Image (tube, rainbow, N blue to C red; front, top):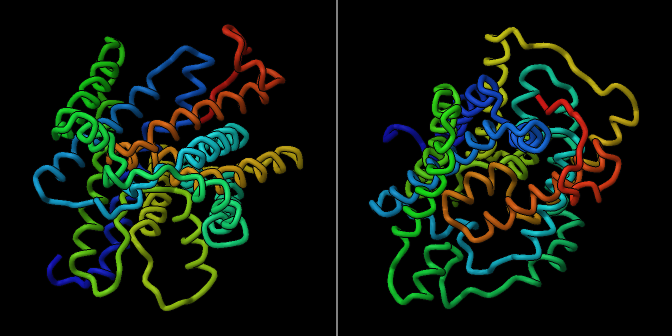
Length: 367
């Protein structure tokens, strides 16, 4: 990398990571919404186990790089010493409900667009524009009122890592021990199922997807140390970067795309390659105006909710988890609850059905 300009190399690194991510996800049906649907309606936890495996690998590798002194992500927005609880809960619920309405998250939409899914294109356009509005536009004022102004100050702890919080409470550094407990517990649950242990392709997929996250931290850390311009430390998200990608295609500002834009485009190409190799390329569109309206509304909820929560199923579910940020588990639980409410509304006719122990009718999970 020494012969490359850091600013020019960064989107290329994101592109490479995205191709691996998109191909692996498409080839192995890695989708958060589908994983939750299969768990709730078919009793199959395979997808969820792969997702948890990816998160555990991302955390172990990222924290290992931090402990080895290879990367320093203390300036990442995931590590800010202001715990935005209201944004994590409200944004997570909005994102999860919207995800249920459209049947995919932002990441899955990029992957599916590679196979010709025009519903995914609609979702991404609306999600990206809604995210930009919530981050930099008029809806940003609502975000400041409901999220920023209600943040809990964690200045005495310096950051919001669960390891740092426990170290502060106990008076000794237990960050490494915390990571080992979290990763060990996750892996123990993942491989507790004998059937899952026999699914080599799912295990490999979880490991590969998990390793994309520390690659992102390494890439942006390198660029931040070598570029002449400010570089945001990031590893993977599909909310604001989707909006940034739209802006780069629609306007010219003489700025070089960042890692996130490269990751989005790479994921699209990777998904397209996997769809082509599996003969799954086909045009798909909304059946009627009602379905289109549902996709528009759900995508807007995901875009706004993703900004409020500072991430999505990948942005918080993998990247946030890799940092051990306190917001990550709160956002993930909120997304899951929002998705359950959304599915109850769609499949069972009422959001209240989500609170019934045996609610739910037969349902075909998302692709």
